[in-house]
Length: 64
Length: 144
Image 1 (cartoon, helix red, strand yellow):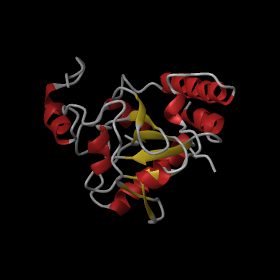
Image 2: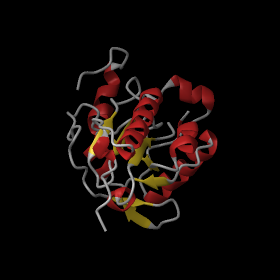
Image 3: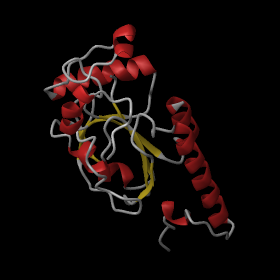
C-alpha cells in the first residue's frame, strides 16, 4: 500500500500500527469471514447473522 | 449522504455501521481539522471507551443506520483492511460484491450509490427474465 503524498513522515509508525500499509486481505468475489460484532448496548452478533437473509452494506469508520 | 443512502436502500439491503479504531486519535496522528472542530479523542483502550466515542459519532453525524463495534482485537477492521474508512457490500451469504478503495480518498458514497442502484436494476431484470452480471447479489429463492 503506497502512502498518499500528503502523509507526514512522523505518521508512518501510527499507520503501520493500524494496518494502513498492509495489502488487502480480501478481494472482490471472496467469501467474507464470519466475525463477531458488538452492539452499542453490549449485545453481540456477527457478520454472518447480518448477511444471512439480505445483502449487507458495510460502512467502516470512526469519529476522528 | 450516508444517511440518505440508508434511508433510500434500507428496504432492500441490510446496513451496518462498523465502528473501528480511530483514524486520528489525540495519542496517534492528530490532524488540525479535528482540533478546529473540537473532535479530540484518544484511541479507545476498552470496549466501553469505544462505545462512548461511537455514540458521540453517530449522534453528531445524525446517522441512524444500525451501529456495531469491532472488538478491541480489531479483527473485522484487519480482515477488510477497513482503516480509516471503507465501504463494502456483501451478497446474502457473505460474498464480497462491492469493495470501495480505502479512505479517505477512496471512500466514495456516490460510487456505492451507483452500485446499489445497479444491483436493484439487476433484481428487476431477473424478475422479468433478464440477465445481469450482478444477478447473484440476491440468490434466487430455492423452489418450495
